[in-house]
Image (tube, rainbow, N blue to C red; front, top):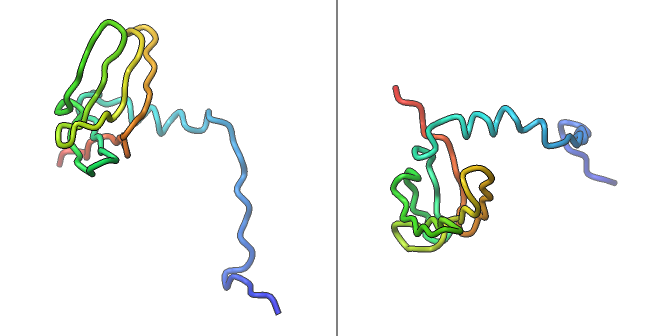
Length: 99
């Protein structure tokens, strides 16, 4: 006797390409980026990107958690062609809408 899910067979997921993310990611980055909420994967602290500690030189911007100093992510390159390299970044989210 085989066990079956009470709701019946589960529909398989249809794989799509990355274009389906345009709306969701567009909404995430359509806000003022300094207001994005970042969460540190090392200590769990969260806050606006503007509150993070940034070490800047000609080649990179290292973004660190203000609470524990772990590197959240690094931005390489310049304003024309930046590359984001995640490190201890657990999540990044748009700020909650103001009432």
